[in-house]
Structures are given as structure tokens and as C-alpha cells.
Length: 561
Image 1 (tube, rainbow, N blue to C red):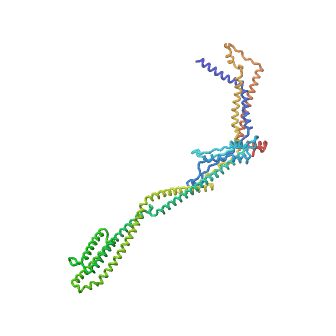
Image 2 (cartoon, one colour):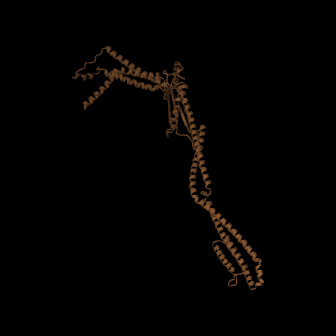
Image 3 (cartoon, rainbow, N blue to C red):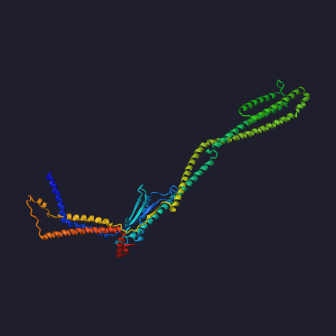
């Protein structure tokens, strides 16, 4: 265990001694490449052409009028619209106009073609979206351009900013107007379709006047009224026909009484008197039947009562006349001429004949009225029978009309909203781009970053120094330590001869040590001073401006706008 610890300690002390020996022998081979590599990068940071970047921030400003009052008629996806605007603004035509107007890339030693100019310009343009950290929505974007001079970078950035703002406004107005025009065209088509549907409905209603579903209630009411009127007419016709029969029987009885022979019944009265009694009995039975169904104010009941009164009166007159005739039959010589020439009987017959003609006229009128009512009832019944088919056809037409009307009303509302949104866009009250930070005039160059270049140079110098020192140490076949000799000898070393140095060697070794430390101090001071200068130059714009103005005076106006 003690032997292992001894070997590990010896190995560790060997490593330390080897490193110290390596630093003592190779420090110059490490420091000089370190300084050379760092100086190479540092000088390159001051030699390579500088690039100034001008940056502007554009805010996506929401519409001045809330969306609850005026609904925009354009897409509210700002990210997609910015992608479209980017493609439009970075197009070949737009970029060539800017490059020709500002004379971009004309100071290049090699004449660039238009495609190369466009490629370099697109490479120098940088567009970044600014998102809301809470919800991730795009609320703005930045536009940056890199150029050899700050004025040129600011000028190009201003051009690009103006293009974004103007093109966005023009795009919004164009899309809004296109939406409104599209809706107006659709509204015109919907209006024409609605007019056609309305004309079809009106044409159908005119062709089916009377059997429309909306007229069903009125048709039923009219039909019910005509059926009641028909019943009244039929009752009146029956009454008129009964009166005609009655008048015909009376006239026949009067003609029988005026004849030379008169049949006399068993009671001594003519048989016509019994006929009147039978007629009265029938009429009273008919009256009782009518009263059981109708009231006293019913016209048929009142007419039948009047007829019964008339027949009763005529029976009384007939009974009186028959009594007179019976008496005349017992005294034929005294009463023959008076019975034959009785003016009352002749007037009664004429009156009955007139009433008979009036009754026949009434019967004809009633029959004509009944026929007319039956025809009209048939017409209305036909309308009611045709109503289901008409209702189905009208429902189809009405459904199409209602759909067209709903589509028209919806398009009309959308067209009004779109026209209002278009007016808002034309007044520039909608969503728009506004410059939050105007294009900056850069003071410090964006490239190269000399502070970073110092760090890069330090890394490059360290790598170069290690590479040189390690390479020399690798290819060096000399023995520099005692332990290296011990490894080569097959027998152990019994004694050592001390190193004897002459004064010249000692002085030479001291000189090397002083030179090594001097080189180390020079390297450290060079690195520190140059790095400090880069830091001060990068953080103090005033110093940069003095240096840049002096460079412009020396190089001439060809390097700036």
C-alpha cells in the first residue's frame, strides 16, 4: 500500500516537474504564436469593412373603432399578412427600385449583376416579429438593414419602413374594397333571385285565386252561408209549390161550382169543402213539424201560418157560398140567375189566377236561384278540394322565396357592414402600422464586434500557441530530465554527477529568463491595452465619431452617402 502511494506521489511530482520544465523550455514558442494569432484577429477586426445596422420598430395598431361597432372585413391574422407583405416588399422590382435610387453596392470593386444585388440586399435586410409574451400574438415587428455607412443604412431602413406602412394600408383598402364589391355582386344576384321567386309566388297566387291556403277559412264561411241560403231557397220553393197546388185546387173548385151539376156529399155540402179541410189538416201538420225544428220567426213558419189563415178564410167563404147554393137548389127559379151571374165568385177566381201566376213566377225564380247557388257551391267545393295540392305547391314556392329572402337579408347586412368597414379603412381608422421607433442613425458598427473579436483572437492565439509548442515538443527527440535517462538504462543509477555550469552559461540562462518574462509582459500588456481600447471604442460613441470622421476625411466621400 505504501509502495503504491509512493508511486502515485512520484508520478504526480513527475507530472508537475514535466509541466514546469515544458513551460520553462517552450514559453517563447507559446507566447509568440499567441500574440501573433491574437494580433492577426485584432488587426482583421479593424481591417475588414464595417457594417452599420439601422433598426426601426413598427407597431401593429388596433382599429380606432371597436370591433363591436364595426366588424373588419379583412383577415386579422397579422402574421400571415406580414409574410405576404414581406414577399411583396422583398420582390425583385421593389428592391431594384431602392437599390437604383440609393446607388447601393455601386462602390464594389466587382461589378454586380442585378440578381447579385438583389441577393445581397435580401441578405442585409432583417425582419423580426415582436410577440406579446403573455399570449404570443404578434403586436409589432422590426425592420433592420446593414450598410457600409450609417446614413445609407438609415435611408434604406426608412424606405423599407415606408413601403411596409404604405403597402399595408393599400393592401387593407384593396382587400376591404374587394370584399365589399364581392358582397355587392352577391347581393345583386340574391336580389335577382329573390325577384324571380317573388314573381313565381305572385303568378301562382294569381293563377290559383280562391283555392289558396290563406282563403280556406273564408271559403268555408262562404260555403256555409250559401248552403244555409240554399236550404232557405229550397224551403221557400217547397212553400211556393204548395201554394201553387193550393191555388190550382181553389180555381178548380170555383170552376166546379159554376158548372150545371154540383156533386153534394152525404151531409149536403160539396165535396170541395172536404178537400179544403184535408188541405188544412196537412198544412197544420206541416206547421207543427216546422215549429218543432224552427222558431216562430223562421220565414217558412210565418209563410205557412199566413197560408193557413188564407185557406181558413177561403173555407169560410166557400162554406157560405155552398150554403147559398144549397138554398138555391131548393128554389131554382128564384136564385138561378143570381148564382150564375155572381160577380164575387168571378173576382175571386181572377184573384186566385193572379196569385197562381205569381206563385209560378216565384217558383221559377227560386229554381233559378237554387241552380245558381248549387253551381256556386260546387265552385267553392272545388276550391276546397284543390286547396291541399295548391298548399303543397305554394309551400315549395314559399320555401324557396323565404330561403332567397333570408340569403338576401344576410348578404344585405354583410354588405352594409363591409361598406362601413371599407369606409373605416379609407379613413385610415382601421388596423394600421405605425412607427414606434423611427429608423435609427447607428453610431457604432454592428459588424465586426471588436470586443467579441478580441475574445475570438485570444482563443485563436491560445490554440496556435498550444499547437506550435506541442508540435515542437512532440518532434523533439532530446532528453531533458533524469527520469527519461533512467528509463533508457538497463541498470539502476548508483550515483549522479552534479551539473557544473560555467559563468557564461549561467549568464545566458539568466538572459533567457529575463527575455521570457519581458516577452510575457509585452504580450499581456498588448492584449490588455488593445482589448481596453476596443472596449472604450465600442462603449464611447464620441471616440467612434472622431475616428470615423477622420477616416472619412482620409478615405474621401466615396464611403458614405
